Length: 138
Image 1: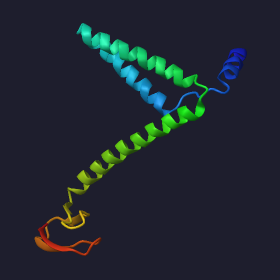
Image 2: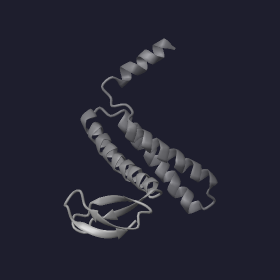
Image 3: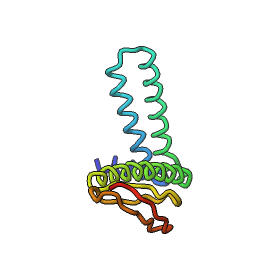
């Protein structure tokens, strides 16, 4: 068993290996495979099977690639996109949590978002960014 591991390590030396982009593609592959099991439509099944085939080829290509800088750049682009999506949903979740206790208004001049506590009646709001004042109900 130890010889097999050493042989595989020698084979993989100088190759890219796996990263987050490969993991994401593997998850997409597994989802396609599960959908393929439960779908009765022949055309949709053929489409899913072709996607599965392409994903497997692309995953193996990236794992065994010797062009490490190019695979690294691809992974960095994917991570930047993933980070944007995570920030968007995190921000949306935070705003929804804040809406329980606060009204969130946008400054008419600079578009800065401002939190105002609920239940204070009609109040004058001063924007901390640009200094504009406007009246809102809390």
